[in-house]
Length: 122
Image 1 (cartoon, rainbow, N blue to C red):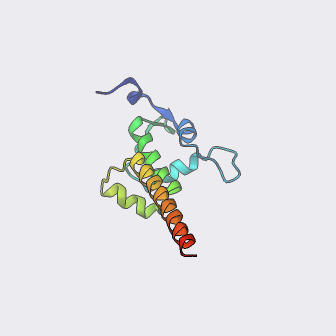
Image 2: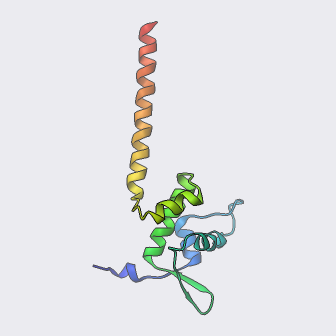
Image 3: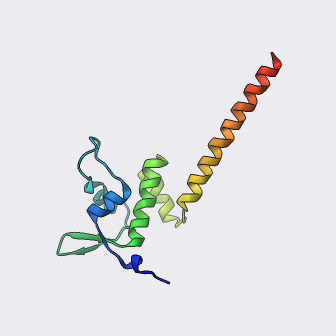
């Protein structure tokens, strides 16, 4: 079932804001980043109206969010992200985030346990 927001198209500027993209100096909105990703990732298909204005639907925005997450948060390379998208692995961003949070908690517990063991040995 499609709801109303699935049909909403957003401009490139709105998408940049949604993704929280900022230039190195933290100023202007780097729409060029999204245009670059469009060239790199053929899966991104905005509607181009009036010859040049790009409009992104929910599916494209989710794809851009996934690319942004993998590149910026996970530190993957463009080629790495391309492989994931090509293999059509549906990465649930929440799962990845939850897993990395779980790993961090687990590491912290290991550190605490090993410190406890060291203090007991003294």
